[in-house]
Amino acid sequence: VQLQASGGGLVQPGGSLRLSCAASGRIFSNNVMAWYRQAPGKQRELVAYIISNGYTTYADAVKGRFTISRDNAKSTVYLQMNSLKPEDTAVYYCKYSSRGDDYWGQGTLVTVSS
Image (tube, rainbow, N blue to C red; front, side, top):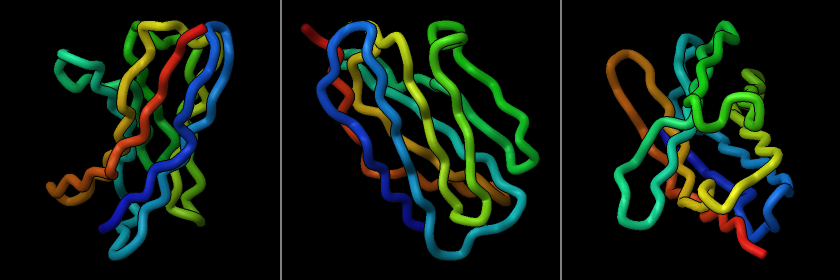
C-alpha cells in the first residue's frame, strides 16, 4: 500500500487548509485511515481517525476545528482544518491500517504563522 499526502502549506492563524491522502495498491474494504502530526521536538500524535463505516475520533486539541472524512471509492482520506492555531504547526502524516498492518504516508508540512 502506498500513501500520497498533499495539501500542506503556510497559513495565517485563523485560516483553513485541507489535507488529502490517497491510498493505492492492495486496499481492503475494512480499514482505518488516520492523520497524525509531529511538531518539532515532540512525539508524533494522533489527530483523528476514521473507520471504513464512517466512525470518527478526534484528539481533544482539534475537536470542533478539524473534520476527517473519506471517499472509499477513491481510497482517499481528507482532513479539513479550520481556525488554525500556531500550535497546529507540524508535519502531518496519514496512516492506513488493515489486517494488522500499518502503512504511512510521507508527511506534509503545515505551518501556521503570521
